[in-house]
Amino acid sequence: MQVDIQKLGADAARQGLTLLDCPYLRTAAMPAQTGESVTEWRSRVEMWKAGWKAGVKSRAVVSRAPSSPFMSARR
Image (tube, rainbow, N blue to C red; front, side):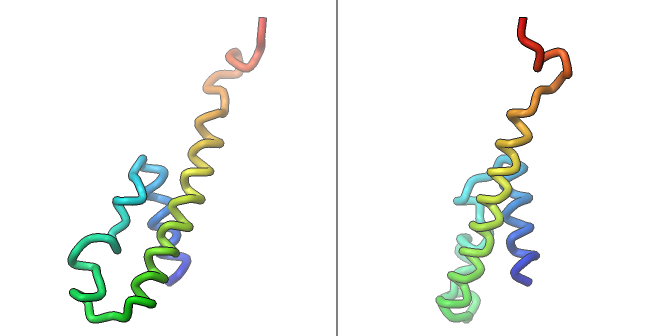
């Protein structure tokens, strides 16, 4: 389950979503609504956030790669 939540966060980052788009931050997913403990909820938020950060890193690496082999050569 932890890997699934992290994957969702990474996918969100690759789509350009922000940390505030975490589904666990929506009102319907808050502990007061779901009945789960704050500790469990926070763990899910942290897992999603870790995945999101990893997705942002991988997105930054991809965006720095030259789009054409001709672009990497300097004149």
